[in-house]
Image 1 (cartoon, one colour):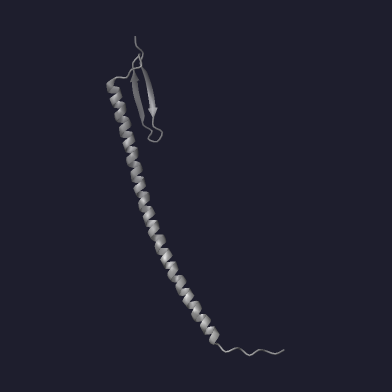
Image 2: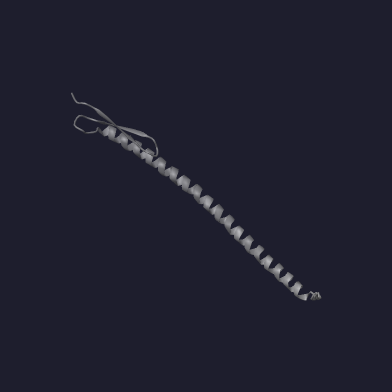
Length: 105
């Protein structure tokens, strides 16, 4: 009498359990191989689709963050230019002030 062994294969990321039946001689039936292949294919395809989706989300976030940083840099440059202009105006105004009389002791 041939003994059947059931082996479990578990995908660590998907958690799916695949079973394959072996005959006593260690051979697998074509149906069990086809089923195993289909399960592996579905799981692998699902994981790839999930990764693609996550990468697309990250790409959108990267684009959004990049746009925000570019706006912040532009805003900072404009503010910096305004501060330089204001500093020049103040400096020129201070130069035009009459010298205060010195107090003698």
